Image (cartoon, rainbow, N blue to C red; front, side, top):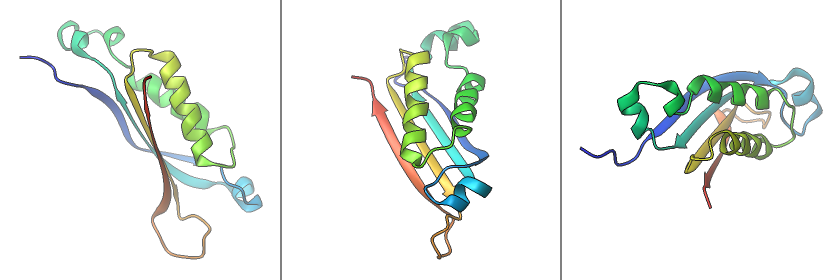
Length: 123
């Protein structure tokens, strides 16, 4: 049997952070949900059972947490920083998908959230 493709993902990671262009958003913050998905060959880990042969989701979480702590105007900027750090740490990553949702954004309407989704592919 041949491994066709593989991904390591974090889904629904929740943070309270201070992103946004509005003064109030920077002052009180908002709740955010982050989804990360990294296409990476984990074929060696399938046989070795060694975390060094895969992408550590603990480390992936730490990157997301660190970048969510840095206030930014735009979620696109935050997602781009996350993707760059993931690509630097795991150069074998083929694709990196980052989605950040701001729950209940201050737009005057009822909604679950506003989301920015970015997908980066290795050149």
